[in-house]
Length: 424
Image (tube, rainbow, N blue to C red; front, side):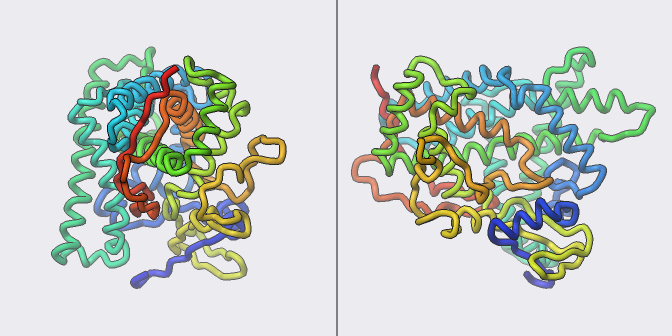
């Protein structure tokens, strides 16, 4: 691509060789113009260079998420609360066609905001809306302005310069928004009462005074930005796909609803621990993640040392794109991969089975930090929505284009849907 060699890794076998068997060689991040020079995203966790420093940051991120409930039952009530608010927002639409994307983003965004920032935002909070828009735009711009990563001199060319200016504007506006939250936390910070990940960062800064500094103040907002962006965009986009696919597949939607009615009823959101009793629900989520891989090319990787893959020699510092889409659409593993068929995730006894060629959160050392949180959210949000509503396309609406909008993520083209309340 341009003057740079890029290796695109396709298929389950090659990806596992690179990221799992040879993870020490393939887990670095490239020094991209957009993420290093135009915006210092490498000061966070996601785009940080691989090495001991990254390992410390990742441990800090994981321990912070676990401290506030990831992987534990203690987190469920706050997610369920957002589920109820989301259902009420859908109910307020009174069966009229509407675009669900913003509702989904606010609900999912509030889950990670409560963990990272210690607060939730009301649907009419202007500043939160603007930050969610910046998250959206950032994911789209990352692909639109990709040419700058290969030809940085094009930043002086009109048109491309506009993309770069917009990228930087998103970056610095987000920085100001997070910095205000951090400054507010500083005024009320109490080392004996840690409220959220912001406080965890401040505690780390507080404890490192006079000693070896692991985390610097400039890292704080980048870490929080990573959590909010990654914890909102991917999960909200993933949820927007099954609503559309279920509207197009009413027979399967009824199966899921009958399962929910029979096993748990409609009064209480099923706890995550009961997902094995709801295989149709779980299979719907898995198939949605497969057929529309939200991060089709994962996050860019880079070789940290000379290595080889599938018999090919690859020099150090070569950019590597991991094509997760190729795994999930491979007919060798998935018959009729373009067809939405959740039953492919069920065995002969009706239990959920997950083939090895399923990696929506990627794999290896850089596997998604918030995988456990995302799985819990997807289950609780989708189950609660299908308990309460039947989703269908508006009367006379043309069949939606399911190819999606490509950015760093792949999201549905804007669509309207009807959420018909299921009366008891």
